[in-house]
Length: 338
Image: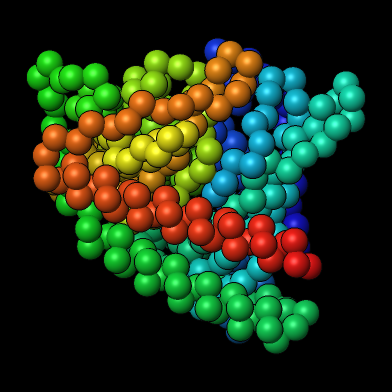
């Protein structure tokens, strides 16, 4: 089973330099994943591991690390293809590839590869997770590899949720290139157009807003054109209902010579018919790079850390940066050997 979405990129999809926003691409990726996983979860009514007679909607639970391999520009056509690669009892893994095409020259390039996890929620009861119909694997190894990925992401989601207590406070008269100088927040009222049939926010809508905030943080720090380079795992800890007011906050955590890591989290205030207090709904790390007017990489100003917490977050970000760099180098060496 596969699903494709095709759309031409318009001026309102891009920044002033003509590069399509990373959040726009993330939203398209999530739309393709939501469609294919929802179709699959409703495809075997009455089956031994299907949702039975209960219709359901697939809700995004997690997006694995996503690299932006190449920028997409205004006028290009984005082709988003999605495929289900693993199913557990209550979740679906979807692999998504994005390819851009210059329709004037015919040139094509792969811009993104992403892995998303969804869970089917009953239309009758939003808090009820239904069973997922199994898929057929071409080889036993494919199922074993998928199960390993499932266990790894499940463990990481639990670890991430446990460290989600931070809050961003405003800083009075911050110095340039400090954490307080570039930190930003966006407040958004969740309306019907943001939501699924179950009345909670589409994962793609949330990711687009997170990318916007991360982009503002990066631009404030560099004062140049910036683009999304990658997004670390995005964990959706809890659903956000229609009528909630969400606060998307971002702060710089680490800078290398040519990249910036920005922590972004989403807090929800369920104001409508809900006595519950504010809660952490989503969290992730975005990586941006600074570009010249010609699209060439520029040096990134060094982040000035002031508090012990900022220094700790900087070292943690440095660890993630070095780990990713080592993994990329290992992949390049493996590709050369093959």
